[in-house]
Amino acid sequence: MSNESEIKLYRTLAQSGDAGAQNRLGWIYQNGTGVPQDDAEALKWFLQAAGQGHPDAQNNIGWRYQNGVGVPRDDAEALKWFLQAAGQGHADAQNRLGWIYQNGAGVPQDNAEALKWFLKAAHQGHPEAQNNIGWRYQSGVGVQRDNAEAVKWYREAARQGNADAQNNLGLMLQNGRGVPRNYAEAVKWYTEAAGRGNVYAQYNLACMYKDGMGVPQDSTRALKWFLEAAVQGHAESQYNVGLMYSSGLQDYHEAARWFLKAAEQGIDEAQYHFGLILEEGRGVERDLDAAEVWYNEAARQGHDEAMEALQRLEQMKNKES
Image 1 (cartoon, one colour):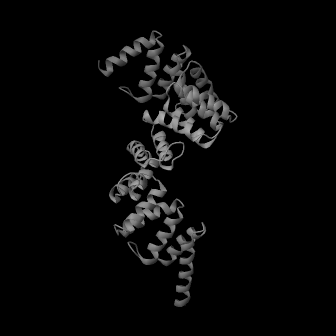
Image 2: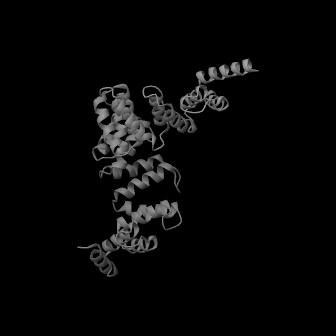
Image 3: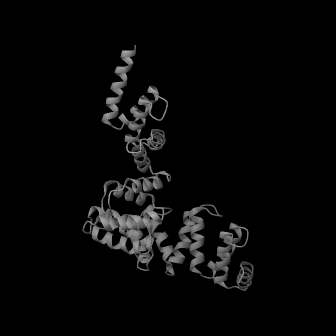
């Protein structure tokens, strides 16, 4: 069936009062599938389906109010619709309610209520809720800290492809928290999450390759994953890219570029190394005044070598004067 024929069928069914077709038509307009994207038309059909008690549509409307999509952002209205959907057992709405109570979005912050809704969703196999529960047990938020229980929930979500849970499980395995330390399995889960674009897993996987933990030491693969995370703005990865270019690869121009990105995000080591490159004029024009600025930024964070560098620059200035 062509898109045009499918839309025509859904429209006919929706106009005759079929709630499932109304919800589907809302999705079609929300995503612009075969029709011009139209938030007002999407909301119209979601509301018609929700008025008939369709839980997906109720959840969709809650999401729109929560994020201000096609409607003014309204936490109270979002809560109303999520409660209706969650009351019918809608797992995603239950997870969203957990988030609302966890963060106090339009309601008083309530860890017990958050856990209640996360558990309802998690027991239905909702991977994000399972990851949320894992984090709570790991952090001791609203429950007694229990790393083994955290690992259990992270593993449930990780098996379903949840990248955050895969990274979290990797960290537990790497550090031996709630589970025997296992670098090789940690690498496995980091690789899964990194391949899904999880910036923290990309950084963690790069570190494993850099240090040869659970895998043979491999600078090329380490750089690849640091770069994947760095281009997404991960400051520690940007610093590590700069370090690899300045040391092993000795491409100081590229090193300076990445040190600067990390330095601007407040990484003291990057501030120091960028200052050093400016002081020595490697890959960039030598600029002692700019070097001093960045040494000062690092020194303000207690960086010892930056403090020594400032003293060195001061001595140089005194000799020149």
